Length: 341
Image (cartoon, rainbow, N blue to C red; front, side):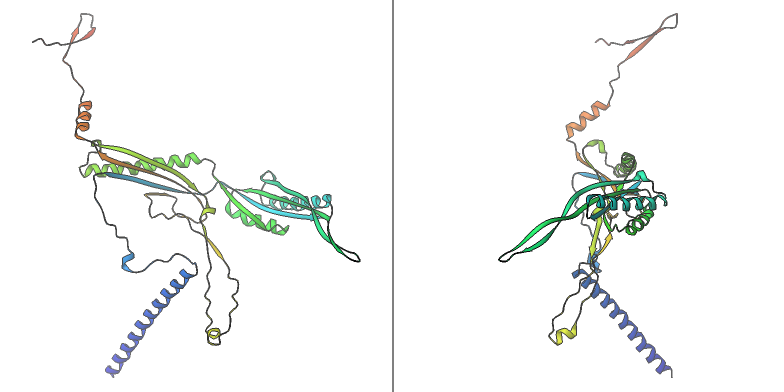
């Protein structure tokens, strides 16, 4: 009986091991297929993919600091495109104004003021239609005006990202479906850069002290510097992919053609990676943010021996012998003491 139980457990263990290995193989295959379909980036799971830097010592000392700040916008502006057609210019203009007024009224009830809604007129042109004129021996196609078309952009400012759903609802209720873009704004850009500079200086001093603790006197080195500031908006970091799997063994066996269906393209927000930064302010991202960064790089090259001696000489203050004379009224005068040979 014990032998039977042992054999059963052994077979169950082998089966479970095979199942785990099989699932792992299938998962890797799915990842490989995803790569060919333009899906998310593929990361090799082998040991060789782990970070393995080969260090090359040299006579220069390089100190660099990279800082990044994920900034939530202070305000946003959504731009919607509208098109209105009417038989006359008056009718087209009236219908357009009615749609805009309804949007303003609906958004006003949700706390978005009328002053934050601006209409930008793009075009106002006649619309033509082709009329066929048939005669006994000929046919003519004539274009004749049949109406007018107005095209406008509706600019709506809002301050909270969750208000965007309200904008979409108000616009769709009035047959406005074309979202052109969403702009992000920061009230005080320089304050963000100032905070980055402050944090960079802290880390820079720590790194300089690190080299000093190892015995490197940085005053014996000549430094050169490079720095950069940059600002990236969310629209720069949206990527796309298509997630699908198309297999038809039956079509291959029967040598029948396959009519490919249109695959949905998905988009996602993929911001700057934090792995190469020394400082990240507001690292936890829930919504798309403005990413402002600053980098500074110092390269120290050892000074020639004569330059070191000059620096030492400059650092020493020449002290001359002096004597003080105190008069009866308490006044003090200083005179240099000259030594004669």
